[in-house]
Length: 477
Image (tube, rainbow, N blue to C red; front, top):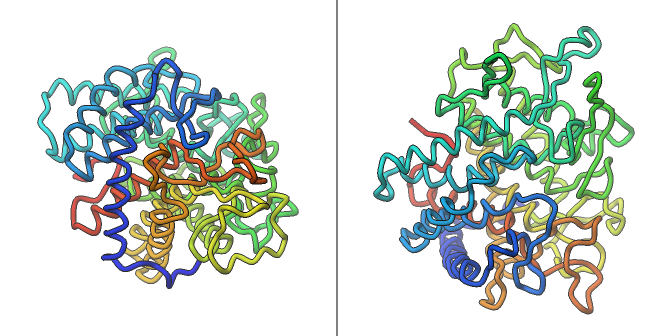
């Protein structure tokens, strides 16, 4: 990535305004034309949103975008749309026991509405606030209950199952990188004073469970160039695997895997983007907590002491390693291929120059860039407190990616196309993404998660540029 190409604040502000304007019209158009009986909009095909059954993880992005657009414009019609649909349609997601997506669906809707309430952005009754908070409490507990226990030290204490992870919808054996951004549902429920109660009224601390999930993810899903396998080289430090597989009988780690990437030994870039964004967000949150909130430095799992310093160091290592990987494997404009090991990419690929989403070899995934950019900004802002140079470097990366996303050929300017950001990829191995006539690879389409995160990035950066309260999922008291 060419960090010197970061736009000025003035230029970025103009692009943000354009994105918000386009997003507003596309949100209203989708709400007007979409029939909920079809399910949830997932991605576009020939410019029109379509559904794709796999798991219901995008409805919160659809209505969450309306909340974000209201945040940026104060357009009450958008707020009314978001409030109405959240009440009418989001309840099944609150109690969904079969997914790892609570942070996506519920924090994007109930969480964003509550956040704006607490900022005093719109009039509301105490009952409405209680309603959103109850939803967030239940969501966090339900997500935390989706737990696979594993030993924190399988060699010294193989029978002590003192660590674990929130398993993906694939089953108890599966740890997804995606879930590090969903774990904020546990953190927010904990902030609201909630717990998970199990058999015999055993009380489970939601914060501690979220921390354990993060430590396990950092240990097994992120590679640090230390020779864990033949491909874990210093040149590939920061590589991220989509999925880690565990033996659910003895809890031991077995192998890397992937669902949406090319191979278990290459980096599916959206998975890495979730790591950058999720860990950066958790660093912001956990750094605000007192030492006594953590499990304690006397406790260790996977070689990490669980006091505040140990947890923050673990999370920062994962975030910075993956961020550095992105910088090495992105084009000058900050964009990346959908998977860095895809067969159409040369082993000595030259990333200098701009990306080409219309190439005939491998797709670019703009949705990965939208997610990663927010992570770069948050990580840079966090690190600026102790290292201004490093922090500025990552924040420049966020600006470079934002400038690319918010302009052609990535910005969807046509009113006939329902998407906001073009060239998003969902599931290349399953051949789910639309390939236009005359093309060899998928391109030109959008996704709910790509559009949501591009708009969330715009709101985050816009607030910063305008000196407004910093955007976080948690209360900044």
